[in-house]
Image (cartoon, rainbow over all chains, first blue to last red):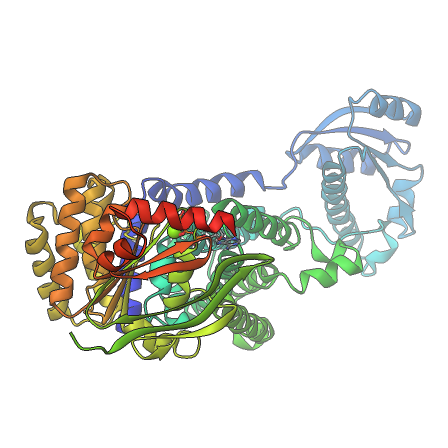
Length: 369
Length: 246
Ligand SMILES: Nc1ncnc2c1ncn2[C@@H]1O[C@H](COP(=O)(O)OP(=O)(O)OP(=O)(O)O)[C@@H](O)[C@H]1O
Ligand SMILES: [Mg+2]
């Protein structure tokens, strides 16, 4: 075990002596965290609105003013011509048309079914989707208000809106994104640093000198892995502090549980890095492989595109994506306060994967060629 | 000198695809001697050394080093040998002292032994003033001497040196050979490759390798007589020409 300590000591010295390393470890991740967290904010502002009011009643006016009062909408025009609104969408002056039908007021007051149409310019799909959801919520609110004024209990008879996607415009995206981006940051650092490490010794030639010593393969891999585990935990901690203090992300669950999972997860990622390092001969090859894996892992993590909206075959692939499990767990623990029992599945999967990958790395590291 | 053989090689072979890098070589090295492994570029010296140090598996044949089979007892073998590879083997981003400490630790020396060895090396090389200098800032000749000292940090029975003096000026080469002599006085057997024929004079016995084959083996005097030559260069040229004729 003493031998492992010597390797760890050497690795730390080398890491901190490398001039490029300090910014990579202490600046880059946090710039990433800050920038990505702000830009990955899906709140949509400046939505240009056209209202076609065919009812022209007190109630329809009330609804319009309620919509107009919402900050993210710019009410451009109210008219009773649908064609005009359509033309304006084509001209790119309008993003969304809200169409209030005749008898809107009458139906609402008699608790009959009535339909408000929302037509969105879906060239910008995200904007369209979000706009529709904002409007749905406002209209639902309005309906409830009216219903309670009239004493109707069954508000289903009010304004009928067909909801396609669950979406909550009042959700603070940063709360949702920051833990996920923290995951990415820790993953990238761990994967790239470990992936480039052993192969670097191959390139310089020092690996040959090590291979001729009686050091055991597992001692070598552990000695290489531990420094990065410590660094990874350190990075994660700073990121977590920023998330809590700056982005005000709550930690509803157990911090111990978060760290426990993070450690197991890091061991898995570092194992993948070690594996990359053992099967490649140059840092360039290792870099490409690490890049390949991280792009796939990130895109299929459910962080930027929900896993449920992927085709089934892609959903199945995400089952092999460690980031997916980690994102899920971190969000569950931090935002929902989940306990071990609700993440135990992910925990078991990641643990087994970590053991498997690291054994493979030890096995694959050849002291004799 | 006792006749105990610390390296025994029998019909050792290494092929890369169809290319025969080492062709059925057999030889013995006696305890305490300096054995020169001579040959031109590409003769197969490094390939042979890598097999003897257990980092390259052989295609066929057998060999024992320090009494251990090179294929079956690699860990034991590695505890008992030192190796200075042709590629540079020290960490450029560690200091002189840190390199000694690291390799000492890997070979299982205690902290006390490491300290003692460090002082010994610094004193012998007279490098106390640069003990905390990064290896990358130290001139090549000094680095080679340091690398040699690190290769024998754990008092191995045998040390393998792969072209330790290539690219170094004559004075430093001379000093390097003095270090080798000192090591043999401590009972270490030295297996050294070189393509400087004049360095053969420093060896107790030499072998001449041409294109994977050992063409001649013996002391310098024996070879000079046998091949009726004035110096080793001539011997080498005769052997190489002989090879072309086959
Ligand atoms: N891994 C390998 N795959 C294929 N051929 C190889 C490999 N390693 C060495 N060779 C070939 O084997 C031959 C002997 O190489 P080796 O490195 O043993 O020579 P050497 O005597 O050490 O030469 P030098 O003085 O240049 O170091 C060379 O022709 C080399 O190209
Ligand atoms: Mg060579």
